[in-house]
Length: 257
Image 1 (cartoon, rainbow, N blue to C red):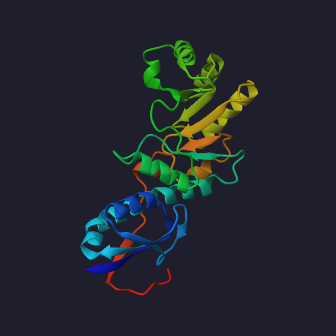
Image 2 (cartoon, rainbow, N blue to C red):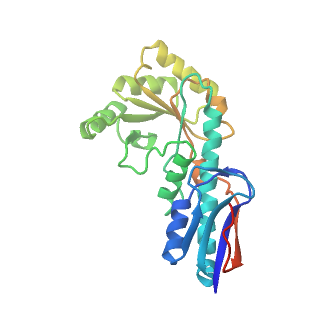
Image 3 (cartoon, helix red, strand yellow):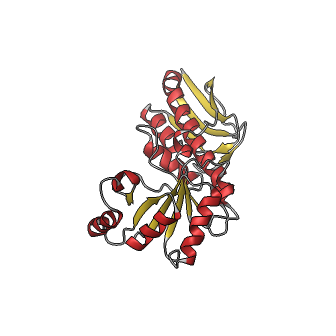
C-alpha cells in the first residue's frame, strides 16, 4: 500500500540529524518529498520531513529516522544554548565539543554541534596534542612538552591540562601554546588568566576551560577571559528534541509544510 508520512517536531529546538535520516529513508527506497535543512530552528508542529512510498517500508525505518533526529537535534539545541550563554564574554568565547561521545555516534554528534553553532574540536587523539595529568605522572612537564613539539605536525599546537596558576605558568614557560584549565570555578579560572597576563604569558596563547561546565552555566565563565569552553554534556547527555511520524494512506494531494 502506498502512503505518505510526515515527521513533525513536538518541541522547540535546532534541527539536526537530517542527513542521517535521509540516508535511512533512501536505503528503504522511499521518495523524499520535502526535508528541512540541518541547523534550522523548529517548534512544535513544524513538519521537517515528508516521504512517500510503501507503507511497510516507511514503518520499518520510522524508529531509526526518529532516533537520529531526536538525539542529533538535542545535541544541536544544547550547543545553541551554550553558544547563547557565551555571548557578551570579555573576549570571543567559542563553544567546543569533546571526545565524550556515544559509541558509534561521534560523527553524528560532532555534526550536530556544528549545526548548533559550536565547534567539533578534537575528533580523536590524532587531531591535536593534549598533555593531561596522566601523562605527567610518567614524564616531567618540560620533557612531555619537548617530546610533543618534536613529534607534532607543522603548525600543530601543544596543549597542557593545568589546575592552578603555578601549573599554568610552568606549562606556558615550557612552551605550551594552549592551556586547558580543568575543573576550575569561574573565579579561580579568572585568577589564573590574570596571573598569566601579569607574567606576560597570555598573549598568543589559547586558553580552554573544561570540567563540569553545562549550557546553563557557560555564562558564569564569560568574565574569565578564556578563548573557549568545552562541554562533554552537549554530546553524551543532551536531552532529546521530540519528533513523531504520522502515516496517511495514498494517493495524497500535496500539503504545505
